[in-house]
Image (cartoon, rainbow, N blue to C red; front, side, top):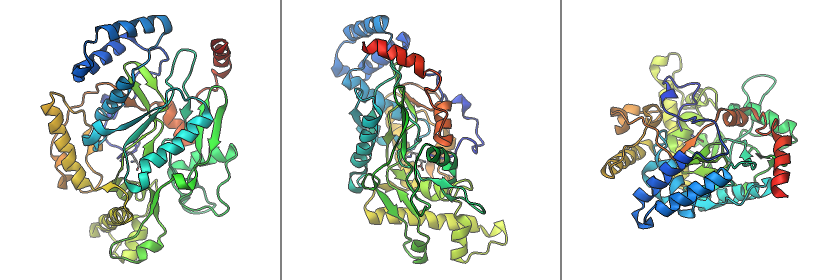
Length: 411
Ligand code: ARG
């Protein structure tokens, strides 16, 4: 994903990424709209009348309703199809869905997150995958994963100079240390952070990932041997874990999902952004570039070589990755396919256009539909804050009351 919202010059507010606040009750109109859409796009499912009546009755008596497995799978796929910021949507219909709606305790969520990484990593042949845990329901708040991705690297403040590791996670790292996480004896720039999983019952709990769960790639360059000595690496599976999946009025706040990387996400953003690993000048130095003036374009040349290294290394390691030219072509094929199916393709230009060589890719040279149909992945402000600062907890205020209600519910 491209810009962190603080940096992006474009007003994203017109595209609803933060839908109405999370509700435990399912809205009847949204449910009806979703079910009608499901039957319209899946004619083999038959006539929606009985299904609609059943869902209505369930909502009126319990405040929410259960999706069928087919609805859940299709809903998750369409939430991906509707994600205006994702360039990789051509394969939306092949997203694998793990139905884990019966899973809600922290230990099991953590174990299933680890399993998610292993299934998705698949020894390098990355599989797009979503694991959907218990939904939000009246009197049963869903669990929350605090991390914004299942795999993220710690950031450590140093007495002097640049931080070690990923500066984006300085706050999160500090918070998990306070909660009891011990960094390795010798911290490195790529120490995998623990998962923080919060439930009403147990509050936030820490879970280390096992190194065997975390497929990653050491970065080397196709020509420059010194590149390997920089000791850079990146994880193979980008699994977003703090967005809320909303299907027909039902919220699934814990539904980590992944595709595979496009090289520029790592090579032009994670390793290069000034508030991330900020490596442009280090690499330019090794390349012996003239950095006395911006006009020598040393930055552009350094970033280009980092991107070559990323693509080369993943390919050499047999780990799925894509380049921004190929992915731009695929995206436009997707847009055309959607148009042939009689649908628009919601897209946000400022996220779709790659962070380097924009105008060299065909996605640059056009405008896009900026509607925001459901189902959707939405980003809630409190979830974004937890992922960055390691708190405040989701249930700090409501815990005792909700616990009471939970006890009554279980009784
Ligand atoms: N940009 C994010 C990162 O660098 C990942 C976002 C999702 N990307 C993807 N290819 N599915 O970690």
